[in-house]
Structures are given as structure tokens and as C-alpha cells.
Amino acid sequence: MANLKEVRIRIASVNNTKQLTTAMKLVSASKLRRAQNNIVKLRPYAGKLKEIMNRISSSMDDLPEGGVFDVRKPERILCLVYSSNKGLCGGFNSSLGKHLRLHLEKEYPEQLQAGNIDFISIGNKVPVFLKKYGILFSKEYNYLIDKPEYEELEKLATQIIQDYVDKKYDVIYLYYNEFKNAATQRPVHETFLPFEMDEDETNTQADTDYLMEPEEEELFKTLVPKTLKIQMFKALLDSVASEHGARMTAMHKATDNATELLKDLKLSYNKARQAAITNEIIEIVSGAEALKG
Image (cartoon, rainbow, N blue to C red):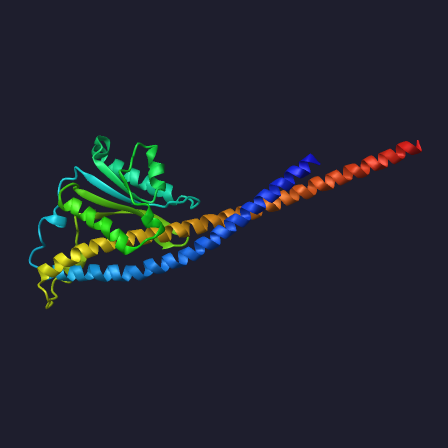
């Protein structure tokens, strides 16, 4: 009977776990809907803004020099890493941490060894993952993940852009999970600064002439910071949507595993119960036979 009790306890435990993972799956699905709508709505805006930038640059004789366009030898590097503040989302954080580490070890091993790479986190899970590799984060803005608002991120973006203009850093990268769909998130990195134009798009629009007010140079300088801030905000929304998608998928798999485990446990319980009943019947019959004798 002790064995039956153990099985009953395990069944109750797995049942509780299943209820928890089911609830977390539903919560993540609800959050995913909102986060997916946000990133889907922003992407056309970001794409159109980049298209306008390319059109303006195609009508200019030369791009501005210095500032965010200044290309320098990458001696000091800044990495802005978007992750999550909570776990239970599969390989969402670990895959991004691995992607960042491999990229830096491949492209900037000397700077990494010399400690010339600074790290800023938006989300606290990747810093915990990378700590065992000796990668420490100097600044944290983890609250932005829980409440992704453009106004709050804009302050950080303004400071980072100014740090680059002041030559505190030579290259700045963004690391995040790109949202594809609920089941697919891809860890990526992209160059934030120096500012780079899409040469293919620029070349296709080079023959187009536009009348602009104000002049191209002034308009271009105004739109560049806006484009950079939108780039940072898009990465944030991508990361948030990816997190909810990864957690929903992970909880769905956990619920399915719990369901399968419950089937096995109930089968084991029924077998043990049947064996216990059979033993009791045998004991009763054996006792009755002994009394007859």
C-alpha cells in the first residue's frame, strides 16, 4: 500500500504542475497577442523610415562625415543585449547568450580578452548566463522589458548615440531574438553604430530626383537619430514578442509531457492497485482453506 501512496502523491504533484503550465501557457498566449501586434505594426513604419532615408541619401552628393557616420577602428565596443527577466521560456536566453559569446570570440577576441567590450542589459537572464564565462554587464535597464515604452527607451538611445559621437565607443551592437512566429525565434545581432545606409536600396533610387523642404542635409540629420531610436525600439519589441512566444511554446510542451506522464502514472497505479487486491484475495482464500484443514 506504501507503493500506491507514493504513486498517488506523484499523480497529485504532476496534476498540479500541469495546471500551472496550462495557466502559464494561456497567460503567455494573451501577452503574445499584444506583443505580436506591436511588432507587426512597427515593422512597416521602420521599413518606410529606412526607405525615406535611402531616398534622401540617393539625392545627396555626399553623405555627412563624422558623428554617427564616423567609421573607426573597433578598439572599444558596446553590446546592448535584450533578454528576459523571467525564465521558463526554453532556450530563449541561453541561445542568445551563446550567439553573443561566439560572435565576440570570433570577431573581437583581442578586445574581449583585454576587457575593451562593455555590456548593457535589457533583461537580467543573459547576464546571469554569461557570468560563468567571465562576461560582466556594467549597466542594466531591465525594467524596459516589463514595460516596453518608446519614451523610456528613447532616453537610453539618446545617451548611447551621444557616447558614440563622443568617441567613447567605436562600434555598438544590438543583440536580441528576432520574432518569426510563436514557435520560432532567431538570435541575431546587428550594427547600431556607425550608421550604415542600405547601398542596394540607395543605388536603385539614385536616378530619382525629389523636391524637399527643408534641404536634404538638414532633413537627413534630423531623421538619422529618429531612425536609430526606432531601430532600438524595434529590437525591444522583437525581443518581448519572442519571449512570450518561447514561453508559450515551452509551457505547451510541458503540459503535453505532464499529460503523458499522468497516463503512465495512472497505469502504474491501476496495476499496483490490481496487484494489491489480488494479493488480498489470495490471502483471504488461503486463510479460509487453512481453517477448513
